[in-house]
Length: 124
Image 1 (cartoon, helix red, strand yellow):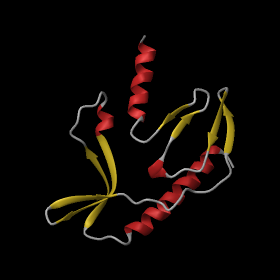
Image 2 (cartoon, one colour; image 1 turned 135 degrees about the horizontal axis):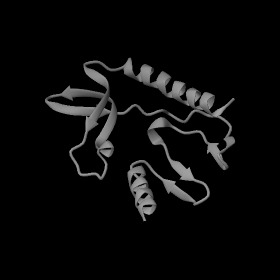
Image 3 (tube, one colour; image 1 turned 45 degrees about the vertical axis):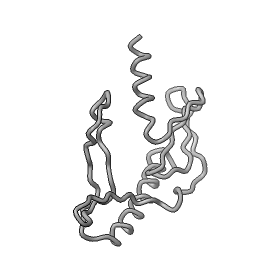
């Protein structure tokens, strides 16, 4: 199995759950992309994806479908471009990226700050 095949299996696991969850809902729209009204250094960070949105008594309700657990597999290791790539079991909605050599961990919502710091460092 290569990296692309592994990520395809992760995606299929998530999509199966998404389709099953979607079948339980009605009266709304699936997979919505919202633009948040807030200041961010790059407009791409204003975007927020929701699994399902519906109106209840005049109020907008946004729902995210959460997996009961990650797609289980052995840790995948591959050398690419002089770096070791590791893929651990993860959930699409709860991703966490780790830079192994620096010990730096990026939690959901923190990727924008990390990219901003990287851009500033490259500009120096």
